[in-house]
Length: 294
Image 1: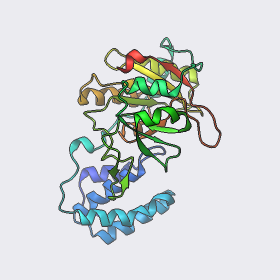
Image 2: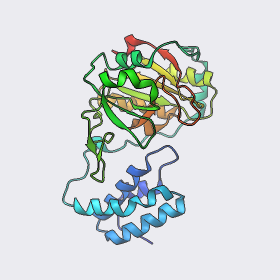
Image 3: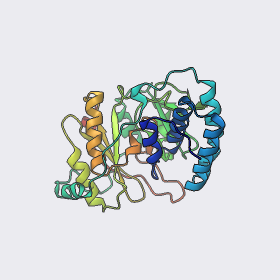
Image 4: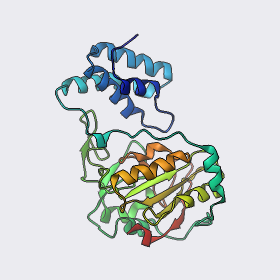
């Protein structure tokens, strides 16, 4: 089924569907919205995108398509998202450059530190016990807590949203109330941390070297957490960078092979000192520098 006419940005989106680990939900919604706003019949958009999901093996997302269409049609008079809400176009990863950085002197050894999750969270959020923090025991059960309430039980969770939330509750793109959504996550302007993960199959010592190579005075590495599987999450304090410079800095991480889905301000990452569901593996804290978190 051909759904033209549509603009070049829509064509680019259609030609570059998300890869595993990237945000399929957001991509579907954006494509459907652009097609409908371009004048394509909503029924045709629904049929086409349901067929796309089926062919791509996205069975878990096909059920969202008709709901997306209803939401888009109901808000057809609203303006498109502000430029800040649009996902930047990141550079292609360069394996050669990433491998060059294996020679960077490592900032930490990769051995677990003896530190309580609550102590790390208190340092990350500057001791503000009224801060809203989103945590989850699974990707389907996220809720937002006051830091004071989360501290004693933080180790029981598998996931956390790296940056403080703006409110306890928000609304999803479909208008459903949620403790974790872009509407109650921090804005790009208020972002404090960017988390970098290389799911590239590199050995841990090489991941440590590449993370160390990204450390800078304006974007210091504050925390490194083992995923409990095969990768390390590096938390960088980017609060001293302008929103534009944050994008430039994260573009470098993307060039080195970082998971670009972690640009999403509402994305879940591994809870420092938490536990991986199923295997029970601990998310060991491999590096922690409180002075880099403030």
